[in-house]
Image (cartoon, rainbow, N blue to C red; front, side, top):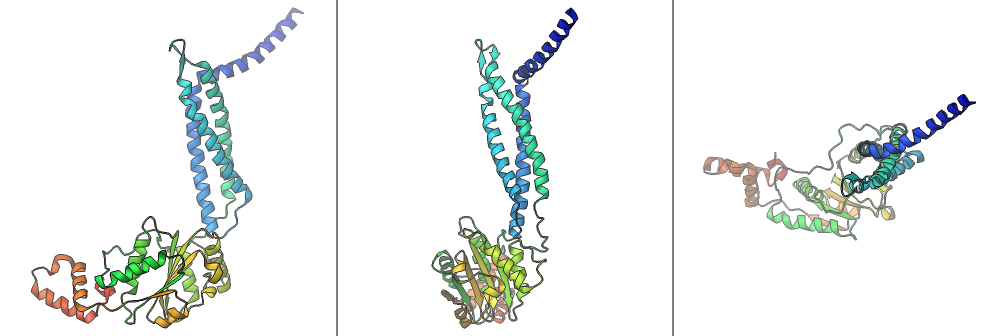
Length: 360
């Protein structure tokens, strides 16, 4: 009978010791649990950022995102917020009692317990994130994508005095919500592209109103597949799975219409005739509220056919203005060298104010 009593007592003791030890551990190992929680939160944030970047890439490719993936991101955000609130209590746990001789056991117990349990929750979220990552459709690999976020035209300021007013007019028109299509033409065919680069560089500065600037060169014989490809590259949109022009058109259209709050500037350079925007995949009419068009052509009538709201004409540079620009481009090489100045003047006269040729 005594043996049975001892055996029962031992089992009871075991049941009591384990919980007591665990609860004491919350106080003793509080700092360790806090460090662990900090580390796991960093891992979760990193995993969440990776998943989100793949989501954005897939969305840009117009691929569907499973609800489970979105749900995991929401849980990860909530878990991170909760963990950071717990970590904010770390300072409270350093308070002391008994006239500063001992750390406050009650505060350390609460923090250690919350941190320990939250570490387990965060680890589970990280593991779930690995599986969720595999459920995101891989983005299409697009070769030769231009860096649309870099500044265009790093070769110095090529806006001359006579064209500064045109430049300011274009910038003002682009800021005007009422104007949807802006056109620039120059009968001689020189200077439009250079001016466009300066406009693009200015627009890419912080504080401008466009989320994305996409550009395509149209040329004299428009190749719809090529134009669609240029636009898709700028949008990081994969068109390789779409063999038909209609399929490519639909995907471009969906991408440009995906978010009504996302504002686009679409630059179409070197129009030789009216371009069917709908056939390319560019929204028009009531469906184009979130985009502006900036068009260039040698022919004003082409811009009129494209229903440009405002049209700017570029004149060829005067010879003295062209020479000053040439001096700015070549730097100090012309100083105190009369022979070189004479040759430079002949070059400028021959180029007839062609900024692009002088800049190369």
